Image (tube, rainbow, N blue to C red):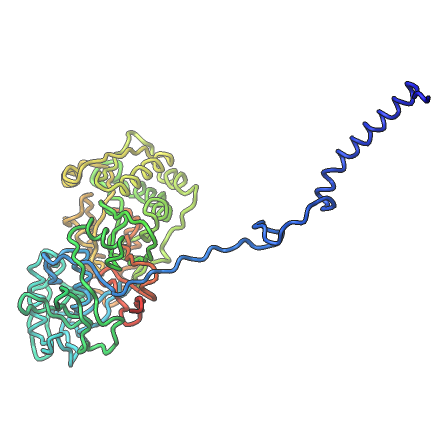
Length: 520
């Protein structure tokens, strides 16, 4: 019998151990190289290298069968006195003005064919466009225009705008408006809708008219519309919605397809879902007001330095979510009057350098007023206080309810304040900046500024006059413009195409836009 020796047994065990180690080392390699694998089924659901990920199909847009707008049946649709929001949107499709404002906030003729200005009498004569009919077939007359404008003079909405009007007279196809002072930009104020009443229903010359059937009120296309364009839809439904909550509900549930909203207002709309959005520029200026009647802001060098310290673009993008347009002067950057060549470029080190150049040595902390009702404004005010403090001018915010805020302004109990004002499209700044102006809370008095303001109002060359005025305001800095706000036009996704809105006319280019509806 053969018996293995202890030596031969040790060698066998050692060999087995080596083979086992080698197998363990090769096993991962076999898996990685594919030399040891079972054949996979053809469709495993796995993504091979280089293969594109499958794209999820986009959800199909569910278009409405009808295009509808919200409106409040218990409120007036008379464009002279109806409230802002849905009622004004509906009214803008019914009535037109002598002029309207373009997206660039320039005056554009509508019912006015031409006009002349007598600079000695401050009198404008407007010639009406011939052949214009109201939706009931009656002709537009000079008497209709005069009556509508006289009502506007007495209305809360337009009274301040037309305060400079001394008289309105009607002639044969002409309307003459005489002013109490010169204003070569007056036509920009006449985007006032012209309407007449018929049985409690406003009649206009616009693309639609108000009517009703068994289903309720709606807008029907005006076949006698003088512009001669076809309307994108023959019928626009009017869905009852009284109050913002009701309007938002109707919009979110796709019962109405378009609304307007101030998304940085005191009570901004909160919307979810798929929404298309357009921005319409306004004449609403946000600015920093300064108490120029008291130290230290009676110093023009310090005021100018504060103006150079404002990062306006950051304020618009970071705090107003882009719903505005940065501006260094109190005229919209979209306007042909805006003196862009005078702008001072902002840089990160600009605040410290500007304050240093002014020679200002802080003796106390300045107070910046802001009203508490608007969270966007309070956020901007806090940012301004923080950034100015970092630049060497200690500032703290004082947040007050609206009534206390306005009382403090009227009493001059502030150093700075964050303000907002709706300017007129003729860019008349007298009430804000002239000596004794109604909104000149900072108490700024300057004979040269008063002279430049008057020269601009009477100027034949308004661009040159505005540039001279803005150059002086830049040096004196009685207020610090920040931005002009925009308003938002929101629509159900996929319904409207090529829409161009303005603040007063969400359907500014009505004939050029397309409304997509579900086929019945």
